[in-house]
Image (cartoon, rainbow, N blue to C red; front, side, top):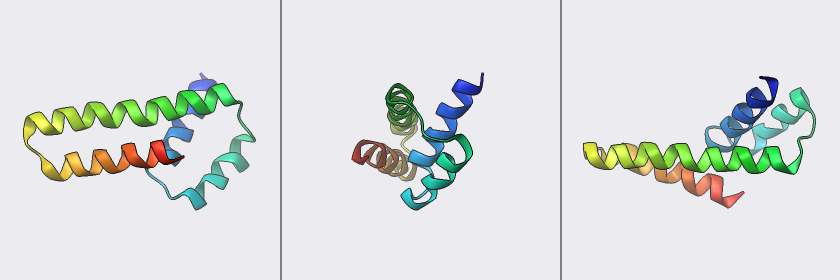
Length: 77
């Protein structure tokens, strides 16, 4: 279970925090392997895509824009 906790916390640092705060993640957990980083990145991209698709269906332009911003941040890393 701790493995998924690490991944989720890393996803959180990718999507919802500024890059400068990511150091706190690594202070807490130490360095993570490349597989964990890739899984976190996948989740950081996939969940906002799902949210964006729902927001498109709901015609919620503000949420579509926020989801796009999260996707772009995850892809930029």
